[in-house]
Amino acid sequence: IESIREMAGGPGDEAGAEAGSSLSAAGQDLKRPLARAHYSGLWIGEAKPGDGLEDQMIAPNPIKWSLSLLPSPSFPSAFGAGFFDDAGDIPGESLLFYSLKGEFNPETFEVKLSKSYDSPNISRDLTVEYTGKLQEGPDGQPAITGTWVNAAGASFGTFAARLEE
Image 1 (cartoon, helix red, strand yellow):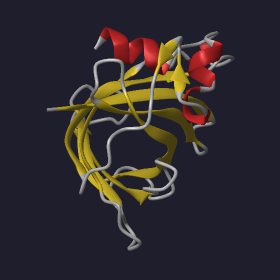
Image 2: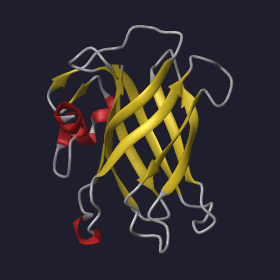
Image 3: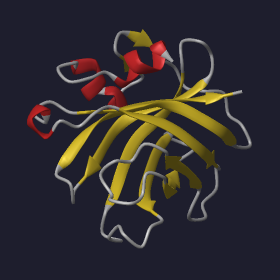
């Protein structure tokens, strides 16, 4: 997990801000992963708020995604789900479920995900957009690093998640 935190970067970490645009993150040498029929399973990591959001008091969020990336021209070629069990910002709902849907480009290894919450108490307009790149982490495991944007919440940052196998 610590290497994933380093890959995600953090406020003031230039490598983290560039994590989704190169094959290097936070001083770690990353390379293209081996081609597979799919990259599926439990992805664990962290999403961190970006510089300038200190006044919003946004805490880093753990990532625990059940996610599949398929080298397919069909949409969605990236899909999954997850949950928060410590959500304190929605009254009466400490457990929040969400869906992940998007695209995986097997030529460029780019990943685009849209996270939408599965709750009648949360507007359908509230989505978090993730843009990143699938790479091979320092330990040889597939990892996605990149940036996230919550337009409705006026927040953004970096993220990294590693496929657990």
